[in-house]
Length: 324
Image (cartoon, rainbow, N blue to C red; front, side, top):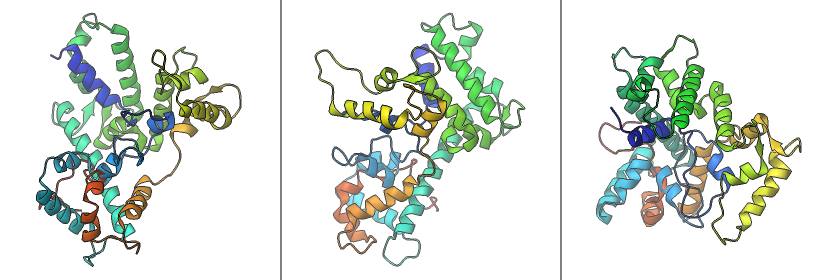
């Protein structure tokens, strides 16, 4: 039996669509809503404020946390082991191709570990599949028996259940009510699967569309990313976003974003963010500008790398069992 607070946290975790987490400074809407394949980091990619995005891209999310707790010597030793893993041809240099492959590997590893963690919770009969009833009863359990009467926000819980069921049925491609591991991966990480994109768009519209008309108007678009405090002057980027809405987002100029326009906004096509991050990290770390990295260059940028996605993506651990 769960209390309402713990189940709410679980539901939010499972239902999240990899939206970038808000940070201490204001982040424009496209940074929070655009869906990238397997986010490299929970942080905004903004070097003017923080290198935390790059930290987590290079190290991996969990490993980045570990690095923050190590002594300088321990950090150097662990980083050297990571560099050796990335340098697959063992020539002493990390090329763009090797770095790109490593970051993509971290992305896949993160998704696999996330699915494995949840799989154990939901495959109650250990048959290698997860039925909708297994998922529903494990997630909502006691509250289903009470028809959510004991929950303070009954409507919210019913909405969560409806959205979970809709997403589960969409992920369940053969319609048998049972998710294979691949189908359950599509349920947890819909942004990774083309056939789940309509659900990603629909859930995004539902989140932003406050008046329930199935479209997103300018006030809803701005309200999704910015709520003014009393007496606070509007940031400059809000005006920029209003212009983006009218000039670019609202393609048919009817004053609203429909599902197609929202899809064009949040699903920007086949952008290889791992490739972009590899290029970015080489640019920031390659002091002799030969287009590749050495261990010395990386160690010289220790503070930068310790705030990068390469070292921590997907609970990355450097041990004898962590093979590429």
